Length: 111
Length: 113
Image (tube, rainbow over all chains, first blue to last red; front, side):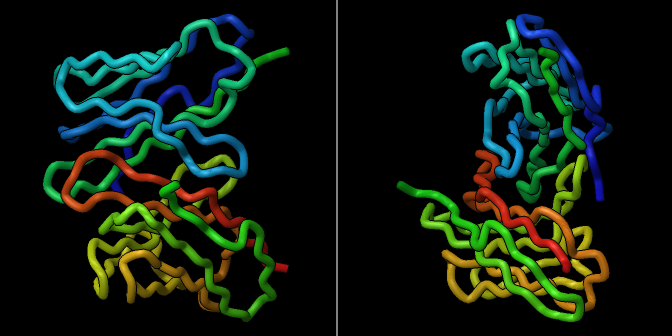
């Protein structure tokens, strides 16, 4: 099935550092979504983006819907230990509202 | 509180057995989905249902079956035909025709013993 290109695959960072990850696609999406999954749990929605160029924040998280509608990025500022997990991007198609998923970015914070 | 409940949290299956994973939601969502997640991997769609009594195969439907007799419930059966069933299974639901994304359950970890 179709999948988004999400990068990086994993990140090892120090506490307090800023984090940036992105997703790209050859398809145009109606909506971009960012989810976080903690070990042994289901993904939880962090940010939803509905308009090209939209920039939305949720606490220390900021995400943008690319102008071309084919990409999105997520930034986390001043990372803390509870930020560890897997971050997934998902694009929602207008025609059937199905989600297309990225493979995830695993965030690990070095002690 | 509205939500989506998966049970059991952990499930062990002997080879050759069928097992059924439960997924129930009280969000009044029309659409429901089943995903499989392998260690270190992303989400792969098994089956989805947009309305009661209707469902479609996803990318990896072989060896699985579903039913959608009630709006609230979308059970997944992992049959003996699924050769590598050990994985983390996630159920999700959404409002049909709306771009609000999906709400996920907390998952079922299935292990073949």
